[in-house]
Length: 124
Image 1 (cartoon, rainbow, N blue to C red):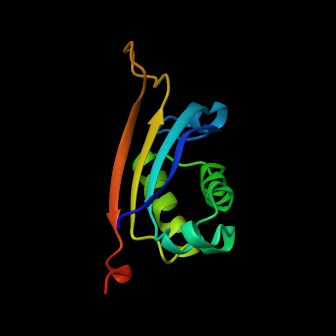
Image 2 (image 1 turned 180 degrees about the horizontal axis):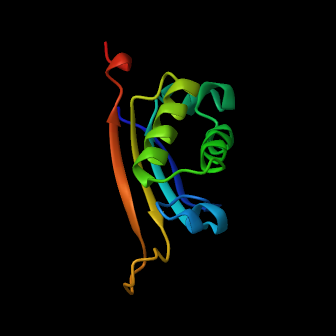
């Protein structure tokens, strides 16, 4: 069985950007995550200790988003690394990080990056 924890539409105000002004004033960001995680035990036990606590995952993400950075790629990579370290049973992560209203003179919903990680360490 393949199973996932979803965190969708996480909104943050963060200071990410190549321009110094973006790192001072900040911008609005949205994160969507699909985290591969073994859920079979939690499905039977109904115990949060047997699953990935998404509130704890959110706190890991929030800590990363609090740090100023230049590139979305760097922030997305830091989120994946932090989640993988905090929850070693993660088998995969699909992460989408989008900057709303990017300062590029275009009328668009956002600009962002998408990462897909497979954690080979969780495979037998």
